Length: 65
Image (tube, rainbow, N blue to C red; front, side, top):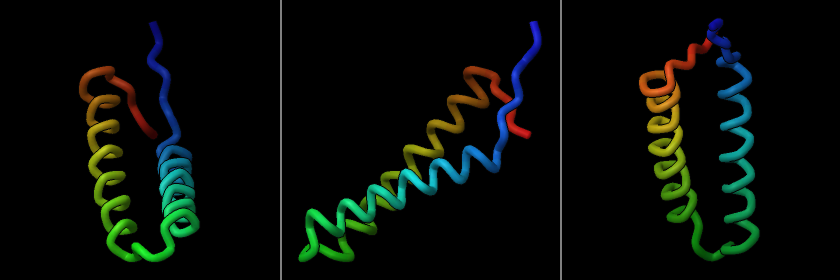
């Protein structure tokens, strides 16, 4: 069974685009709550992305190149 390698640059770009969209939607929906909600979104997204990458690499054995 061959192991599929994923493109690390593509993964980082997609995660950045998703985070940017979340921040933009936050600014549109809650314009008076800036920058507190933006900081919270960035911190939560960083933790979620880190845990997701840990799960993908350590538990599932996916490799990024």
